[in-house]
Image 1 (cartoon, one colour):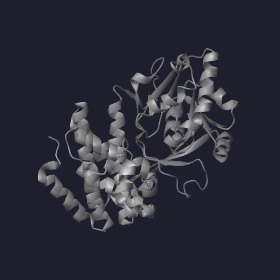
Image 2 (spheres, rainbow, N blue to C red):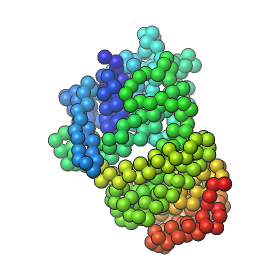
Image 3 (cartoon, one colour):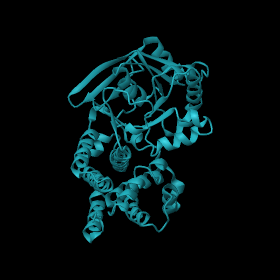
Image 4 (cartoon, rainbow, N blue to C red):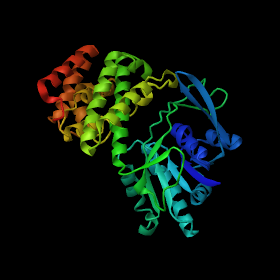
Length: 398
């Protein structure tokens, strides 16, 4: 049986990539530092995922799995060396910590004559392949690096943090939505593209990276910050509010039009995808929380990430990101709420988070909407302000 190694046995690792590779015919070994999870995987050699929707729930057992403690610096590289494919599902901030095991594994496999190794990068991080390449460059020789395929992916399955009742009888159970397609960068593979069910190679891939970050992640984040503003705990509660749904839909339309213009692709598949995402955001059975989706506001307001990055992409393609700016303003409101010291100068906080100038057009627009949030205005009034901006003729792509 072919072998896969996955760095990270968390929500995405078990709930998506581990299930995908196991069902695709691989024996999957997770490398993780959470000892209780590692021990339970090795005890059962299987785990359940629960596919949930408005129609009910279905438990699926994922088999042929094992785990290794990431602190075992002898065994972990050996597992990497023997793998046919690898993946990282640890979160962008933790990537640097898993690389020593990966590097030692690559060196060992090449020494043993096993050939190239492809690493599926399953992280929400723009230009993740370049970031990891930069980390690997001092650790591997040029010849060794040439045998590593850094394959970006677009992780579209939503996997929330499990509720206590979900894991009461089995701490490994993960709740997921049914969607299970993983687009991957066809051009990044070394030694050929493996055929794995529901792994779909695309080229050029940057379009799918931006579609995920600037459409899916952006709309999801806005839903979360507006949920916090309205005092809702769950995403499904937020997206059910007509004003929230309108803001999210309009923001996603702004981004869809920009992506269509940038990549010269039809806009309808993008708007259809946005409509499907909004329906998926409303999956009550997932129980996805605003706290999870909206976590790490500094990263999500960073210049290349889902809010500021999407807004800049709209601007660069001839439009004005009016409703995306509402989302950025809601994120800033949430950040100030969590960091009261920022209330003294929210504009300075915004420019620090976005790396934009204080007088940048996007900064100015975001601050105008922020003042409405800070004043506790109803979403209807904020939408009216956005509509006036559009009606004044500065909100359309020309």
